[in-house]
Image (cartoon, rainbow, N blue to C red):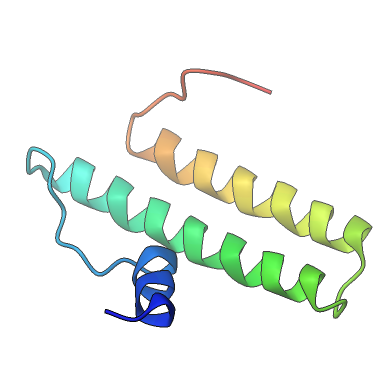
Length: 82
């Protein structure tokens, strides 16, 4: 496998959920993957100077709040709070 393929596989893994199956775990995993992908896109935009850092920080705060809200709706409390 070439380095490019390894990097792509690392950046966007395509693996099945490995944890104990429950609808709650599956939804949390899907939400976590969505958060991760959006964070990756946001990071790329910042690195390419397409959006300024303050705007990226605000978007990150919104992403994090949305993820926390989805976790809370599943009855999962984060281990740490802001």
